[in-house]
Amino acid sequence: MTEATEQGQQPADRPKPKRAARLRVCIWCGTPFVPENKRGPAPKYCKPSCKQRAHEDRVRLREIGAIHARQEAQLERIFGSLGRTTAAKARKAAEAVEPEQAGPQIEGQEELTW
Image (cartoon, rainbow, N blue to C red; front, side, top):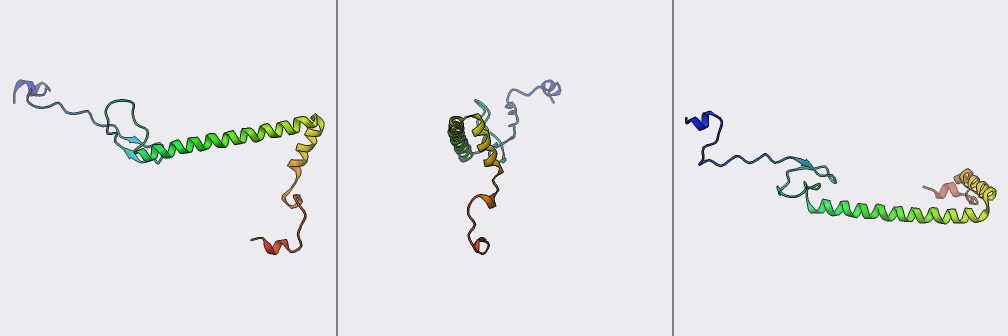
C-alpha cells in the first residue's frame, strides 16, 4: 500500500464515493423511496400521482370548508334576524329534536326500514 491509502486518503485515479442517498417516506401513501434528484428541495411524494392526489385532497377540503362557512353564515343570518331570545329558543329546540320526533310517523315504517 502507498502512504496515501494508509493515511485514509483516496488515490488520485479512484473516484470519490458518492454520499449515500437519504431514504424518505411519501406523505401521501407512506411508501419509502429514495429521491432521484440531488438538487433542489427534498421531495415529499414518491411519484407524481401521489402529488396529484394530495393536491386534489387539499382542494376538496378547501371547498368543504367554504361550504361549511357559507352554511354557518346563513344560519347566523337567520338566527340573527330572529332576535337573541327567539334564536336561543330555536337553537335549543333544534338540538332537542330526536330522530323519532323529526317528522310524522308512517304506519308500518319499521317494516320499510332496512
